[in-house]
Length: 288
Ligand code: AMP
Ligand code: MG
Image (tube, rainbow, N blue to C red):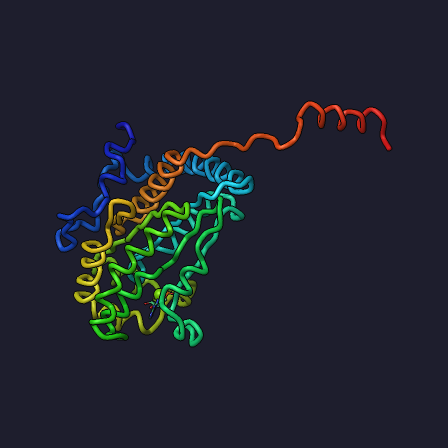
């Protein structure tokens, strides 16, 4: 078998720069990955173990006064695979180090507040990896497409989101924004599967067909999100999602490399280790 490796850092291969063209984006591609599915799954499992150790180090750092955290923002239309990332990628790390939040239709209470109110409450505490299954970006996606607020309102939100994210970054949180982009055909097949398998009915909402019928408007809204909110400090990684194995492999690699760059270190002991060892030995030698 040929070598299975990342030819290009996925953070480079998938970053939405100023010239990013969503209409031309191959949703069945595997940018940066030189290898096949089997090789990818094996690689992902190995990187998952490394990610897990790094996450534990970040958690330990957070317990010892550090203020750093990571926030994975997951966006994508129905069936894009957001749930699969949570289960298969985040499932590789200790759940106590993960803070997951899913954002659906706002509750009446949430609607009374600014749209960032419910988001801010779910930011990860120090040491944690936060995961947003949908996010504040719904307020310039579904809200825009369904005209839930007028254009004057949603059009001001891109700059507002950039400024808010900047504050979040300054408070110690590294943002990792991932958009899973599935093709129209693949979404159709995945929705059909949800209607053909009793173990998948629960994932289907009648509204999914209505959302799908607005495909061009959602693509336009996503294109504007990438054009206006993919910043130097908080870029968007646009991930082809027709190959689930690739999307999971890519997100694992992006998170692992992000944690490697943070390089959290094991906190030093806050007590005299030799003294404590001697005290413990005493209790072993002379039981109470
Ligand atoms: P799901 O992720 O499949 O559980 O669906 C959640 C639903 O909530 C999706 O249809 C989203 O479009 C919708 N949603 C999320 N955020 C908002 C928002 N701010 N305003 C309106 N609908 C939203
Ligand atoms: Mg859904």
